[in-house]
Length: 147
Image (cartoon, rainbow, N blue to C red):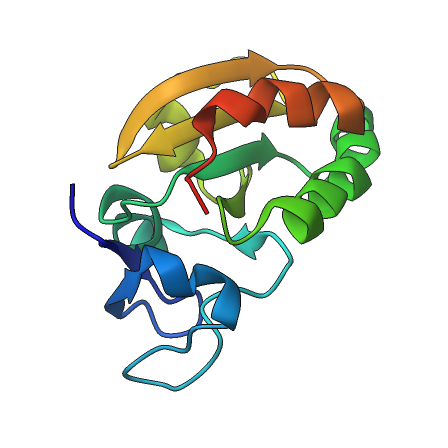
């Protein structure tokens, strides 16, 4: 295993290599110079999914949601709190299943919210339904990158 990770920029989609030892130092994108971590979930589209999930060596947890979904609205602040606490050991992203129906279909999303953890672009865990922040932290703990 190398000392660096490949991860996409949430602003421009450029793929960057970042030393694991420097993840907590506020790394910036080599192309657009914006911060690689925002402390907030990143909105994913079909176009950004490749760079931010499939090419990422950092674990990525994705919240599949929809604007009309009551439980999704309950989950949103919990997911945002986890992003503030757990980045940069994991990236947090959201996919609006209404706007990105092809992505929702690709992953067989049948109920929302559904959380999926990806590592190296592959699904490693899935959790349907709303979790409280302590439950979410506990579920994500085995998937966090070392810091």
